[in-house]
Amino acid sequence: MLVPSRRRLRIEIWIVLGLSLGQSAVYSVVQLLDKMTQAPLAQGTSTLNRSQSTREYFDLTYQLLDIIFALVPVLLVIYFMTEQRQPKAGTGYDSGSAFWKLGFDFARPGRDLLQGLGLAALIGIPSLGLYAAGRALGITTAIIPSALDAYWWTIPVLILSAMRHAVVEEVIVVGYLLDRFGKLGWSVPLAIFASSMLRGSYHLYQGFGPFIGNAVMGVVFAWIYTKTRRVMPLVMAHALLDIVAFVGFSLFGRSVGLG
Image 1 (tube, helix red, strand yellow):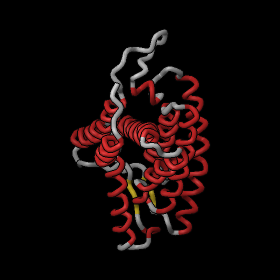
Image 2 (tube, rainbow, N blue to C red; image 1 turned 90 degrees about the horizontal axis):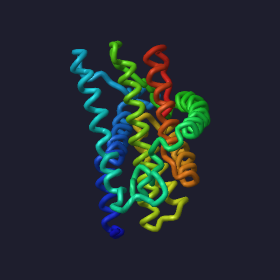
Image 3 (cartoon, rainbow, N blue to C red; image 1 turned 60 degrees about the vertical axis):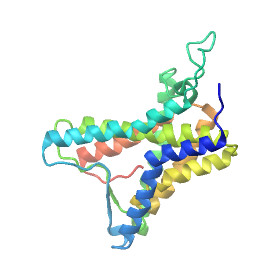
Image 4 (tube, rainbow, N blue to C red; image 1 turned 135 degrees about the vertical axis):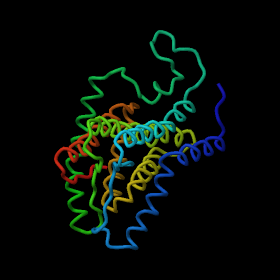
């Protein structure tokens, strides 16, 4: 098995981030500056799931295409992290599989779900308070989790969108980056800090409150990952948070921001 050089790893990281959340972070900073130079942040609005066509089935097509193509960088990460080696003797796992290394599998669904529920409660409840505080302080925009028209497919698409965000963010920002930072010789605290800052930065378009909240969430999630080496509970927790926000807003019309 060939071990990639540090130079190759750095190039690989820049490619992955340039195609995914690093790109989102750059756009987010520009969007924040745009909003701040137009009006106070408290008067701004951030819409997370927008309608892309006035025609129902074209809108559905655009939504599904966005979800599908957003997952391509995750496939790239899985490809980069998969090593060519024989299955580990005496186990059902291939020790070179990226799914196995990331803990991105269904090896322990019950335990992962319970941990995901606990993490969702741990992060979700304080996030509501932080959102309210940010709005009161004028450092957070009004967040609209969904602006999709009410069609038969709206709720399923919002659930798929939530799952997409969860998979992309947790696999890339936590599992992949902590693995690559470790191979570059970074300390665990530095790797966690960089991962959490990236998570906060691509939420900056929502204001400084969501930046802080998501950065803290990033620290918690990354720290837990260093202990468990399983990304699946993080994916489940993130998906639950976003499903509650997206679907809850769509059904009840309340503005909630959970990151």
